[in-house]
Length: 380
Image (cartoon, rainbow, N blue to C red; front, top):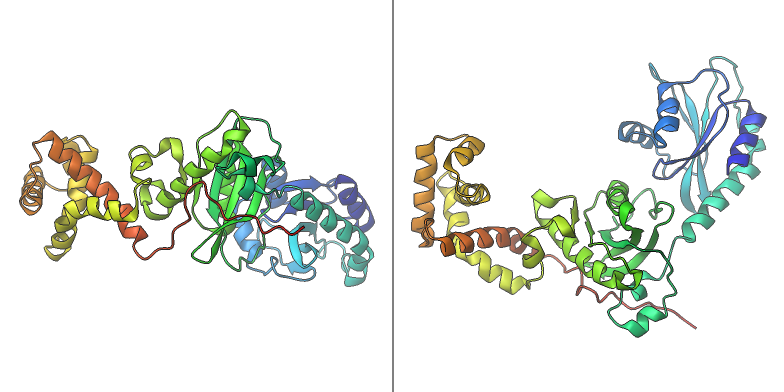
């Protein structure tokens, strides 16, 4: 890849960088002429910032079939983006600093066409690399040892599984995982939306999940690490449950990690019916609070989250202590539970936590039974 970038830079006599479709820097050529902050930061940080990415994507580069000229701005030179498409799929971008103001006509269509074979070669290499990171994880994550044995997945531990939803019709096309990470883009189907299954080295799991979220704008769940990769199916079960929490509990969105979920590690395992039964214990708070202009459910949850500390809770809610006492008394009256009793506090707290999951899951399609991904549709 580096040789291709160097050759294009030599032929066109301009500065060149090559990025994958997530704007991670893969190669860059020698600096020729002026440099701007965008190129400098891309090289130093090894990826473009979210602001730069949004600016460039606004020019339609993700779906463009050919070179796109992007005019300069104060502090940013003009450049030409050449999408690296192979087989109708965009796998990355070749960036050429456009010296139009310094050398008129330097990057004409004819000159760009002269490097088309090199561009095609770069696109093919990116495609091969991306496809090489695909693996039958739907089989490797099966709870059936016999099915797992047929997957042929090899990776050193410790590993962690990641579950995420692919946005239907995403402009950037299929997501490309980082190096050393395996993915199965069609491991499960929930509500018509495919789930992306990922197996990553445990130290890379959090960053990989964040990148997945950045690519699709959808939540992701990370399972706990496993030293033995053959136990990764257990991490996958946890990743599915973590995804369930990330989708419905704002506190843990957009990326939820199983080891960090606390009580939600128990609640996420409950069926929707069990969650609804538990949430019903505080239904009166959610029904009466808004009508009275009070968020009784939020007040009680904040109070319990802060271990019954009145001063801290009142400060958090921005109310006087007497107002807080009034709300707590009203909540006790509506639920018939005594906030001074430990068992009642525990029931209220669990009920309020369960309500977030139960409300989010009402009418939502399930992600599938944990650990039971849809079988591969292989033909032989």
